[in-house]
Structure formats: C-alpha cells, structure tokens
Amino acid sequence: MFTKTVAIFGGAFDPVHRDHVKLAKLCLKLNLCDELWFVPSPDRWDKKLFASAEDRLAMLDLVVGSDPRICISESELKMGDYRGSYVSMTELQKEFPDVHFRLLVGADSYEGIPHWRDPLHFFGTEFNGHLLLRDFELIVFNRRGTPKPDEALHLSKGYAQMFWVGDDEGFDGKYASRDIRKELLFGYSGCPEGLDPKVFEYIKRHKLYLL
Image 1 (cartoon, rainbow, N blue to C red):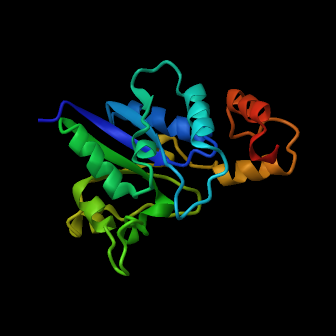
Image 2: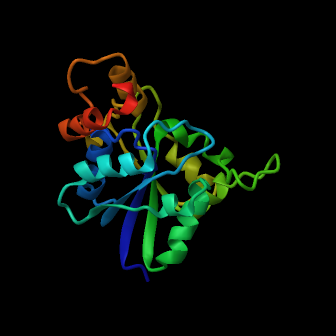
C-alpha cells in the first residue's frame, strides 16, 4: 500500500529556470503528486554540464521556496556515475517501497524513451527504456513544437499510465536552459526572462556560464 505519490523531476538544471519551477507547482496543483522531488543528474555521457553539482544544487535551493511538498534529492549525485532514468527510479523504489513514484519527462524526449539505457551496461542493444515505461507512470509535459503523445497507443503497448500537462493545464514549455546559457554567454545586459532574479544574481556572483 503506497503512502504517497512522488513525482521525480530529473535533469541537469543547468541552470534551473522558471518553467522548471512552474511545472513543479502545477503538478501539485493538478493533484498529479503529493510531493515533487528535483533530482539533479551527475556528469553524464549524453549531455555536457557547465555548472558544478554544488552550483546546480545551490541554484535549485534558491527557487524551491518554503513549500514542504517540493524538495531536492541528491540520489543520482550520490550514485556517482550517471545510470539513466530506469536505474535511478528503480533504486528510489527500493529505498522507498511505500512511495508511488511517477517520472516527469518532456514531450520532446518521449519518443526516444524506448532507446534509453544504462550507459555503464550497454552492449549494442541493451536498452531499458521499455522497462521504464512498463514499470513507472509518466507525467509528460508540453514542449513547444512537439506534439502530445498518443495516450491510447502508449497504453496499448502495455505501458503504465501517462498524464499530460500542456496548454489546457496552463503549461506551454517555452524556456530551455540551453537558450538561457546562450543569452548569458553573449553578454545579456539584464536577467534573462526565464531566470529567477535570485538565480541570476548567483550566476553573476559565481561567474557561471562565462557571464
């Protein structure tokens, strides 16, 4: 018997931006979870990280606020090597067997999930994304220019339930950390629209992203 539902929001958060925070609060408002955990990733094979784990944690801490339902988990950072979402979610389920976990993913990532893998155990075709889809429910959020996944097709494949957070729910997914880093790199004169001012001040103070 599960005692609560927790949404896992994994990512680099390099840096965390307004859409990350908006989505976290929206998932709680829509009763898609009782708690939401931000889970920053360690260095990873598929994405270059620009800020250290310590800086990314500090920036997340600045925007989480006082809501006890939103917290930061260092579970992936403590694993050391990046193992991918299925291993991470499975380890969390083992550690918290009474928690019902759901995973947040962007619509732009959804189609590629069957090809996700554990980068430490890959021998050509050893994908585990289908196991992630089978064992864990998804909360898929809107990303501009990406269509909403076909829920009926998703379920027909034997996958766990999927929930959608899009325009009708008040989320359009317009910000991206990559774009914000570009603005900072090219000498943006003020705080980029997608950044919380507290995060912007932290970035300036610590001279992140070659600002």
